[in-house]
Length: 287
DNA sequence: AATAAGCCCAACCGCTATCCG
DNA sequence: ACGGATAGCGGTTGGGCTTAT
Image 1 (cartoon, rainbow, N blue to C red):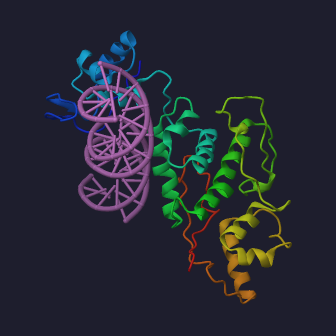
Image 2 (cartoon, protein in one colour):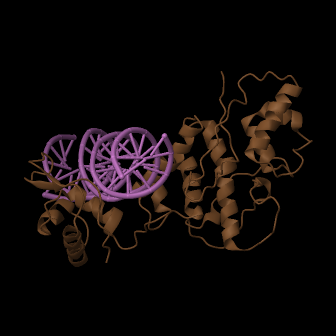
Image 3 (cartoon, rainbow, N blue to C red):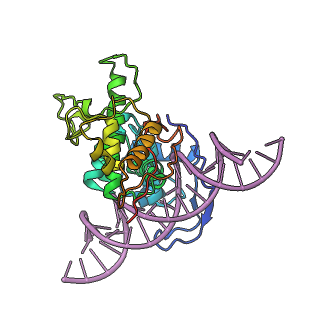
């Protein structure tokens, strides 16, 4: 039995909602008693006909409210709690294909609701976009998501799977090019590895750091291309210093691409901190 | 310790699509 | 074909909680 009490809006009455044609309807957080009524009624009579259901169950709620409460909270199988890296990755992938079609995305994540996914997107992903000063729907931000966020998620999944415990002196580096898309035989759309993943770095041997430089400041990347960055173990500060140094050394004036006073990310950005504060810096495009 | 700011997410709102008589 | 009821969707709100000052 789900007994999590809602902490939301203070219940209040609304009189004579024109659509619901019912007086003195309750709004706000659901009480345990209401939850029990709803669960009991649906267990006995099934879902559907929500307005009728609300009345028959003795709930002073709109049918809409009952439906939402059931689907998002009470229905058996609804999962709560933090999204797994697999789920996050799948959401990012699906959103890149489907856009804000939350219900469609939710169909691929059993137990997760469209509301939850929507909230995740708004609170986590759009927050990232704001911090990077991107439009969350912009091509640039989508690229950042593909290159780094997804990379970190895949990396995390690999680490969690304990398939390899390679000790490295550079565990925090982003090595997208080495991330493999593992295949499974599953036909379920839920399985992340069956989702066509975006291509890794175009250059074999390209390091995550190189990719970051390339993405954030292509002009610097071009100068460093082939010379790499002496390994794949650079934190954000090093990259920034490198870019500034290269820009200065080459006397590069880069239209639309500056390395500006960067602003490190906080530690607790996204769940398990896939983007650490040493991996990205803020930059601006100057048109 | 007190207060402010920001985050999280359940719940609501408005709109559109679909169903059904 | 029409209109009302219902279902479903995406956007928005706002209150409790956490963190920063």
